[in-house]
Length: 392
Image 1 (cartoon, rainbow, N blue to C red):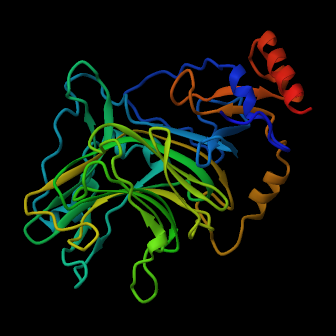
Image 2: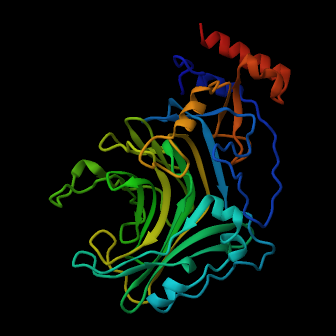
């Protein structure tokens, strides 16, 4: 159970008296974005967000902003996106190919939030397969299992005769400074691929979830970089690979909590790994990729093989440092000044165990905000009473 007191900040005990803000976004076959550098997706009343973190998910962690990226309702009809695009034939084709679902993945809304990569890297003695990221390896698919219609974002990697095509996207919010980020995803396909979901600033400030398709389907790798030292030797404390987890080829909810001095990883709400080694220290961005280069980590995919990283939604609650585009040699003074003027956590919302996925629920309201929040006065009185008793 989450403690009912927390010095200097609102108590998570108020979770037992949650108030739901009923906001009903209109479903559309178009990708949408808040277009804000300081987002409160679906929750304009919320001024901060609280999650249960730590080894037992029972320690409150507070974040200022919230994003929910939903890829589940992007089809106009039941026949759309049911077939994956054909595999690319050459590395030259991969480098020059356009994005498939341009109405979504080349829209202004998409480009506000995401940047699809198309860089390449040559073969080396350690990584013998040259690799090319392609716009055409990122696309939308619709569930074809029957009876449950939803779409999802797909990143694909495939092995050609003499090279590998891959996929990578970067989120444009590159000033994350501590975050809880989740995805509902699965990985399917050939052995020899790596699906990555991670925070990134540089090779010494990176926190990873990686699914290796050469691993058993019940094993996932959780790492804080660097995983090798300057001599090229493995750092044993950098990475853990728990076994007997829920199978990654089925839909699961994966989560990273990057806090001040700790990293925690969760699967379907249960903590499965933790680390204090090399916890990231720099403002970072979210990167997602699907790749292989024939090296020791990814393994070698056999010719003609392919694998897909499929994602229904991504959720983030986070704090920031500096400009939204990431560090530029010095901290952004204007952003820091705005942060100093913040009134703090006046309307506290939770993002777990909510009435509607992607819409946080209010759990605590301070008196100064009571007049501007659309909630029941009876329920508000309960929250106020709870806050009073937990502060005694």
